[in-house]
Image (cartoon, rainbow, N blue to C red):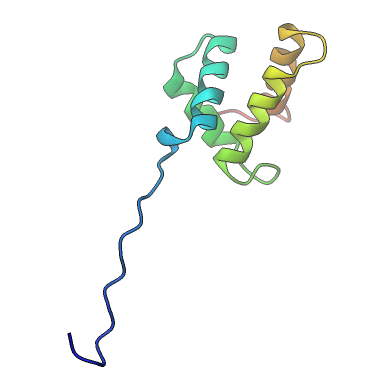
Length: 92
């Protein structure tokens, strides 16, 4: 290697959404609560990641928090997730 040659950058491993445990957990929660497939749950989350939750990971973390720490039990969690994902006339 010559003195003025720059070394090639080393490829960094990329983490896909399927390797993110929080996203996987949120997919499972939504799939069970709404009787949809995990793939459909991912589509719903992708459709609603936006201004309040700019990344899929942030939305997934919020879904997990709402579902696992619900004041009032799982029925309240389902209602809160429904409002989060489907309120304001949004459609996946």
